[in-house]
Amino acid sequence: MATRTGFIALTGCGLAAAVVLSGCGAQGSAGTSGAAGSPKEQVSQAFGNLASSSGVGLEFTLDGTLPDLQKINAALPKDERESDADLKETAVVLDGSITANVSAPQGKTLADGIGSSSASVKYQDASLLDVASVGSMAYLRTDTQKIAEMYDFDVAELKTLFADWDASISGPGNALLDGTWVSLDLKKTEGVLREEKLLEDLSGMALPDSSKSYDLLQSLQASFDRDAQVAQNGDGYRVTVPAKKVAQAVADDLIALTGDETGDEFREEIAGMKERDVVFDVTLDGDKLSGVNVDVAQFLDNPPADARLALDVKIDAEAETVQAPTDATEIDVKAVIDALRRDGL
Image (tube, rainbow, N blue to C red):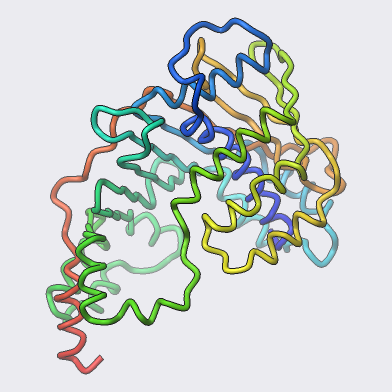
């Protein structure tokens, strides 16, 4: 949906993901057991216990209906509303999900850092996009046939585009179109690009600073400990935080992490936020975090009372270690560069 709704959804997703991942960097409470203490202490302990895990799995889904989207759309300013046709396309995400797994280095826990990770974008029973990172290797796979059915294009026709290309290009290209894994050695690729003096072309670009991820988690954890209120809510807990305070607390770290050169737009959005609380629900399985649920409609200036669009995050605090895919077709960047030069490109 237009800019405001995109910011709303991003904020909701970011809040849920950051709240979950903050436990992976939390110190002090990791490895404790039991569930004694106040509701806030129990929730904070569950976050901290994620740090003692060797792997965490997350599944993000949006819980809502097309009528919910229509009501939310109607609550937006007129110049930010989507057309009925675009709204129906947006509703496709309600049948999808995003899964993510993070694993600690071998023999360590997430408190020591992340050694490997994976993520998938799913629609109904298909995994449209899969990515993985293990060591210096990055992996990618797409269900091109399913995507072709969704967006009405011919995979066989796309394959003809690679017919006259060098095998270093056509091999990985056809592998993606066939729905099999391709791989890229990031360390090796960086060396090739430096040797070819191609990295100089990227010197003016703002790039994400992954070293800021821990700073972000620490800022978020400090904000949670300082400002959050937690109450028992049935079998789970209801957490209330002042949205603007949290956003301000993590703004600098989040901007650095995403690679935004100035962060002006993000800061303007925060400056324009109303002073209001954000509420989300947390569920625990013993002393482990098992779910986070955020109604993103609450980020609207005038949320409709009878509409709900909830971001639901299921959490597996004991996920299996992410492994490198087998039989991936490697992208040889040096060979690709040489082939392009031979063709005069």
